[in-house]
Amino acid sequence: MICFPNAKINIGLFVTGKRDDGFHNIETLFYPVPLCDALEIFPSEKLSISQSGSSIPPEPDDNLVIKAYREMQKKYNFPPVSIFLKKAIPSRAGLGGGSADAAFMLKSINRLYNMEVSEEKLEEIASSIGADCPFFIKNRPVVAVGTGNVFTHSDLSLKGYTVHIVKPPVEVSTMEAYSMIKPMKSSFNLEKLSSVPVSEWKNVLKNDFEPVISDRYPIIKEIKDIMYEKGAEFASMSGSGSAVYGLFKKSISPHYHKCFVWKGTLG
Image (cartoon, rainbow, N blue to C red; front, side):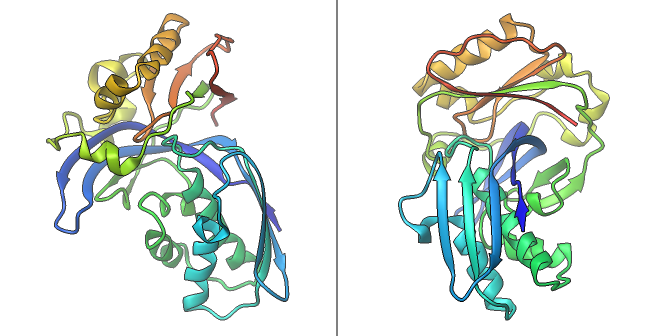
C-alpha cells in the first residue's frame, strides 16, 4: 500500500498564551498543499524501515513514522510491516512533513489491516505523536486552537492559486522559536478569513514567529519581498519557519538563490 503524505501551510499564526504543561496555545489556519512525501507499507515478519530523499532522521527511532507504528501497536494487535519512506518535504520548515508522515502511517495501517478505527480515534492517537499531527487525519482546511489540535472546519478555498514554497538553507528549532516571542491576544478571527480577499490578508494576518525569526535570518524577509515584487497576493512564513510561501494568481518563476523551491497549484 502506497500513499503520499502532503505538507501544510499556516495561514496566520497567533501565539496566545503559555500553558501550565509548558506548551503554548495558538490560533492558526492549517491548509493542505500538494508537496508530498511517498510512504509505502506492506505486511512483514518484522518491523523495518528504509528511507531515501531529503531530511532523513539519523536513527530510525527518531522517525515519527516509527513512533506512529508503535503508538498504534499499543492499542491494536496487528502484524509488523516493512516501511519505505521517500522524503521530499524539507524538515524544520514549518510544513509539517514529519507529522504528515506519521498521520498517514496511522491511516495506512488502518486500511491495510481493515481495522475500521474511526477518524476521531486516529486523531486521538495522532495527538500523542505531535501537535499538528491530528490535522493530517482528515487533511482539510481547519482553524486550529489549543496546541494546534482542536479544530473548527474552515470553508476557505484557494482553488486555482499557485503556491510557491521556498525554504532557505537555515534551520529553525521550534523550541527556540517559542522562547523568543511573547504571547498575546490574537488580532484577527481566523474563522472569518474566507470573507476577506487574499490580496488584503497582509493587512489583517501575521505570523507571530516571523519578526523574531527574520531578525535572526534576514533571508526570510528577502524571500518574502521577492514574492511580493513578483506579484504574490499574500506571502508569509509557515509555522515557526524557515519556509516561506507565496500565493499567486499567475504562475511565474522568480529566482530564489540557494533555496529549496517548490511550486504547485492548490485544489
